[in-house]
Amino acid sequence: MIKKLVKIIVLSICCNQVSAATCSCAGVPLLSSMEASSADSGKWYLSVTYEEHNINDLVSGSDDINDETERARESRSLLLQADYGVNESWSITGMLTYIDHRRQIGISQGSFAEAKGLGDGLILVKYTPQRINLFSSWEYSFGFGSKIPLGDDDYKINSVSVSEDLQPSSGSYSWLAWGYVTYAFDQAARSQIFLSANTSINNENGRNYQFGNEYNFSVGTSYHLQNDWAISAQVRYRESLPDERADVTIPNTGGEWVDFMPAIQYQLNQSSGIKLAARIPLYRNLEGAIQFTTSDSISLTYSYAL
Image (cartoon, rainbow, N blue to C red; front, side, top):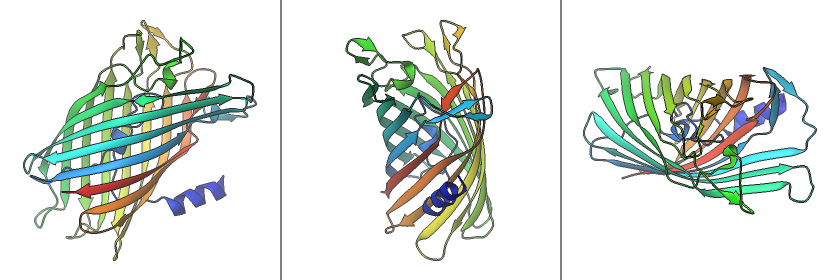
């Protein structure tokens, strides 16, 4: 485990701060992939992110359990994001996702299941009353918006609907609230610390299923090196309430997670850059007798400013 941790830290430390995660379904990130800062007035910020999310740890409460089922579960996602600065204080963020969920149980025939397609979308309006400038070392921003179901939430294999955790879309709207504050240690803002928080209030979908509401808090730091490299790292706390179907609690859903999220970025030119980031579990305390949960995830982002 130590060797794995060191390897991922070396490969994936980050520069641009990222807000804590709010999942659309089955561990698919939306707010977690959104850049924390707001776009400048009249400017566009575009990005595309590819993420691989492995969900192979078997946990009972806060204890790891040996999995003898030969089960393998992963989600691959492509996220397209656009930010536009309306003026110096207001900006708008929109996001689209494409999801590929895969699950393998043992090696028997018919044990493999895959569901893919358009996932959920997101739209967020941000208000930034204070930015880092020559007269202030502080920046803070607030946002409100909605997660929008765009894809299939009744995906079928051989005429049988797959489980909720495999559906490409959650099938329900969610209300989102987000906040962010950072402090720069120098006038050029090369070294910063930041706090972020967000919540997702989820509604029931057409299949009478409701994903549990989520609450996230993170603290981190970033540092821009002398050349075109920058690094950052954050620790995130996430709480998810149990899922429900027709107001009945679903067993073995919900819990608490603490993750370490490092990343590294390289500035290709004045307009574009690439970023490699990872998520490493530090602590889990999950509801019910037993749950499969995140083992690790890694993402690669290309961004372009207009």
